[in-house]
Structures are given as C-alpha cells and as structure tokens.
Length: 116
Length: 114
Image 1 (cartoon, each protein chain N blue to C red):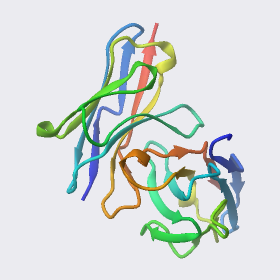
Image 2 (image 1 turned 30 degrees about the vertical axis):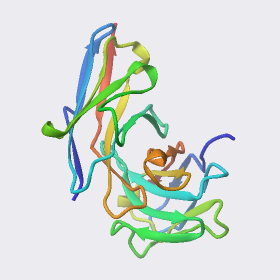
Image 3 (image 1 turned 60 degrees about the horizontal axis):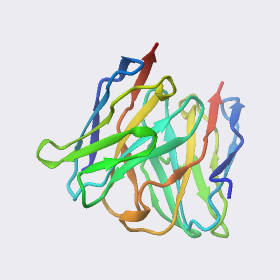
C-alpha cells in the first residue's frame, strides 16, 4: 500500500482550458474527499464520496467543477473553463468508514494547479 | 457552525526550545480536534487527534496537545524543537453533518533556528 496517490503533481494551464486530476485512495478505504488549498490558507472541503456516491458538495464547487468516483475506487476532479482564481493545491484524502476512530484521514501529496 | 482560529501565522523558535502552537475552536457539536503538519509541496500528515477520552493526546515526532473544553483550546506543544520540525501546522475540527468533514485553521508556519 503506497498511500493516497495524486496525478499530476503539477499542472500549468491557460485560462479557459479544461483540466482533470486523478486520485487513487488507499485500496480498502471507502470514503474519499477533495479539498482545495490556496496560498497561506488551510484546506477547504470541496466534496465527499462514499464508495461511488457523491454525498456532499461544498458551495465552493461551482458548476465548472465536477467530480466522479465511477467504481468506488479512484476519483477524478475536472475543472472546466479554468479561471485564474482556480489556481490552488487540490488535495485528495481517504478514510475507512465512519466513527471517531476513522477521523483524521490520509492525504495525498496534492496537485498544484497554476492557471496563466 | 464550526471554526478554528490559529493564533500566530508565524512562530520562530531556537533548536531545543519549547514549541507552542495555539489553536482555539468553535463547535456546535462535541468537538473532534486534529493537528496536521505539511512540509513544502507535500500533503498533510496527521500528527495527533482528540475524539473522546483522555484530554492530553500524544502524537508522532514528540508532539502532544491538550484539549481544554473550558478554554475551547487545543494547543500543540513539543518540549524541544528540532530543525526537522520546520513546517506548516494546521489545526482542524470536525464539521457538522457527518461524513467526517474537517474544518481547518489558516495554519502556523514554524521556523526553527540553530
């Protein structure tokens, strides 16, 4: 088990282009989260999957953002028509089940997006 | 609503000195509290967490934190700083509504000087 993997690590794109990020969680983890971290700030919750079901979406997730977890394993986060304000580190995390003992999930190393 | 305030965006200590990073929280539900560390260009690593039980929590790398309900605080300490402790530290509280969502503070950057 190599932990939570994210790809790519860095992405530079021109404003208006679409980008897609991938997250591979720890294999036995059924819960998957996406967070966004801008410079000088803590991570902010974007969305949550339990298996393949997307159960919660933040208001931060505008219509240009979409996330999927088609088979309850890896997840993708797509941003359409990127804007400079989308520049941030996008973090994926996973955890096994609910309850107090499973709080404090495992984060990936993130994908740093720069929109120019 | 849940929120976290980390007092001091930058803290600087000498190697071997006490590390104290402050965190205060607000929560409408019994709080679960966390400290994470982030090294440059890396994800977040869990240092320790408080959910229930003992209010003094020990974590990795010699860090510990004490949950004080009356003060709504969860400060992080380490008796003796090491150069390798230089990083950004985030305090977090569980969000409402289930799903294990976390609400993070803005972070404290710790610098350790020789």
